[in-house]
Amino acid sequence: MLAEPTVIAPSPLRPEVWSNKRGGLCEALDYYNAYKGSIYTSGRIVRGVLLDGEADRLDIFSAQVIIASVGGGRIKENGVMVRTQDSADNSVGIESVFRTWEARTPVAIIAGKNHPKYPCTPPAVYAVLDFFHITNVWKEVELTARGQFVKVWRIRFEKVDLNKISWWQPNGLHISDASAAPIPTVKACDHCQVQSVQVFSKVWTCLNHSCEAYYSGLSDILARDPSSLVYSSAFINQRNPNPIALGSLPDLKPPMPDLIALGSHGTDLISRRGFVCQLCGCCNRRVYWSHLVCENKSCNFTQPAQIFPYPLAAIDNEIQLMGNFMARKSTRNGVNQNVLMGPLYDPYASVLNRHCLTTMNTLDICGYKVRQYILPDNMGRPIGSFTLFISNPNINAAVNGPTYMFNELERADIGLKRNTVAGGTEQYEGLSRHFQQNFGAKYKFAVSVQSKGFSEAHPVILMGLQRLIWAGKVAVDVTTQVLAVHAPHEHFPPPMGNDFNELLALGYRESDSIRYHDDGEKELGPTVAALSLGSPSTMKFRPKKAETGFDGIVKRNSLGDFDAILEVPMKHGDMMVMHGSRIHGIYEHSVEPRGERRFSLTSRFVDPAKMASDEDRAAARVNGAIPAAAAAYAYNGF
Ligand SMILES: O=C(O)CCC(=O)C(=O)O
Ligand SMILES: [Fe+2]
Image (cartoon, rainbow, N blue to C red; front, side, top):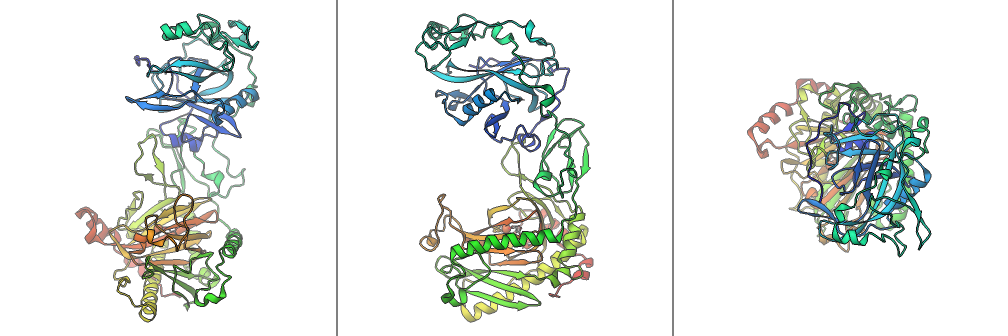
């Protein structure tokens, strides 16, 4: 049983580093990047340990010594986690603990607010204590709340810097001179000859759990009164020689990264890390594209992010690499091998399932190479089209063209931010990987995205909107004509109908991507168009898992998901149009940027008549109205 929490006073000292969000720790601290579990390892060495509600009766949380348990299966019983199994000797966690003990490297310890032995009022959900070194690791027998005996690993940590007052217990026992500390009894076992320290107050026992004499002398106490087993004060108060030079410790409170010195251009991985606020110590995630903002509501730290222009030569290089990747893939998939397939020969896609994609079309429209793929249902009936407008250097370099738009978006702050993913509490709140800002009518994406009216949008948004309206209409016209000749069918979607009244701007940094999803929200018109700016990406389609009609036509992977049936590159200046609402019932799509700075502008028609509230309808009318200023950017392909 865990001890009843007692009323404890706040400490007069504050932690240097803290967070109310697990994601804040993980994004800001190199020594704790684990979203799950209590141990963070890298290179198979423990860098950080998080101690929270799952503490045991014998765990110790004192000013300079921490004793914690690791491993063992637990289940939740009456709201409390109860151990049900012995801790394994060969788990990755315990092996890393032994390796760390041997390597004598520092371990940062973080206290969670639910630790039952917190010696002061927890100042935050998570508060970093300090760096510790491991002094002992041993296996103990513990009586669980279920009345079962299980074996658990215990680790004794000692603070590295014994001269620093511990904020969590400033009045606790601080021993600064190891030679002044008591020395616990150490004895060799008569049976196995292995030396064990006397950990318990009552009696010495052999702690070698593979020895027959393990726990000898304790079985009586365990059977009669296990709660009388407590640690010996000499064992707790001992101070071991510190193996770590203070000057070699990493920063407990890392400084703001010097991105210029690191050679960062501003959207690479090194620049995406969160940061520890130098004013208040809060661990922050990188939430905004163009700013660093402290997430502590009572702190006002904010700083513009350093994002330098991304050279077009770098984008060309990324296109080259993507081309190599896709060529290898298309050779493997046989996409370009089988010339006999005639009209299905496609030198562009790296995945193309010929049994699935029955019609394909290549056209020249206003300088764009336009490729169209018809998507079928599982009976082979066309349900929609995917049209790609492939741009070229002339189109990209034109006045108000893609290169101008890209450069403007690099400089402007259009409000891009990561939004919270539904479901989590504040403590475990998840953020989308990429950055978003919606314009026009409200669009409920997987996450709820803030929306601005087109009248307050940056001119680039209006330029994008005009281009997408043009591409949408052309793609729908081509689809209609092609199908009237080749595959007239009642299942095919109706024409576009309404102009777009919504535009979602997305920003992707290095290694961001958007996982498989559909754009099938019920309020949406049948057409979705997107303009790609900057780094290239690949877009994939696959039938949804439940579409069993595709079995035998499309392979499934080990998770049971279908393989992609189509994968195409989208490069700087390219546009794509998905037409046909049923596409989103049957298929899902994903986008994987293959470079370090990409913006996409996607437009849809969100039908006010299908919105949930009058308020949303009114907002859609106001925000979705295209302002007169947009006329300056009207686009007809040239
Ligand atoms: O980034 C893109 O090009 C498309 C993103 C997408 O699929 C979406 O916004 O739904
Ligand atoms: Fe999408």
